[in-house]
Length: 331
Image (cartoon, helix red, strand yellow):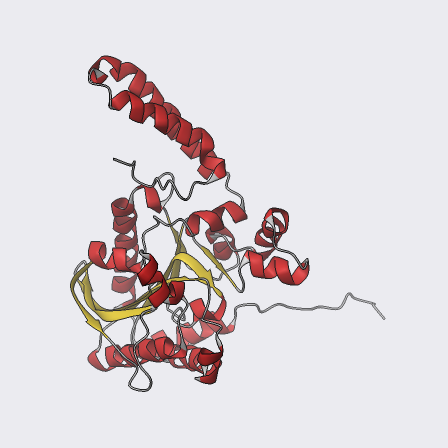
């Protein structure tokens, strides 16, 4: 049986030393007399853990992006099954149709009832094509806003999980008002009179991510990324070519990692992942995510709705603010 987090079709080159040790562990564990090698197995496990810790504590921004895209990384649908009890999915935007790239529904996370909203990428080829690889159309953002207003009416907090390379860029989505749909979500989310908690669980690309992430508390999983553009898109614009070198440079310049976003005041917290990334232990990743969400919801439930809206508006309004002072005596 394949080891958790291992995909034969997607291997990270910087993990090669770890994969080699895991192959040795698997070969030894499959021997009929494996118990005779308990000491050697223990040493291999210690070596593997040490290598994982060393590699994952020194990731480059581009390596973080690649981890966030790992095909076995938990997605919104996985967290629904691991986090949510009594999940009741809701569909449609009452305008055009239902967008499978946005998943919405009533849920209970821990002891907290909420409206749950998240990007859906899909696992199988058919799911990925149907959900446009997590790139939502305008009807997806209208669907999300319709459910958020329902949550406000019912007095329920809102939880959103962000995992998208960006909004769908096709002609049809533009004809149906992609930019307007996202802009309306930004405006309406800023004044919803109910707590909103958002977490970037994988990719957080541009307005496609921000369209469901105007929240009172925004968190990021440790190996997620959140930026105005993907490294490849940035590299193609700045250097006219997206390759390993330019992607690395772009990822560094974009300050897209969880740590850099926290330093820049764009998110409120970084949620630790299991050693080696969430794709190696999805259940532990879900437990950490649930704890962070429930703690934030309890904190926000004690805040007056008017204060909530004012603080949320001020939080996003001051992002990017700076002071430009002329030097004394400068001409």
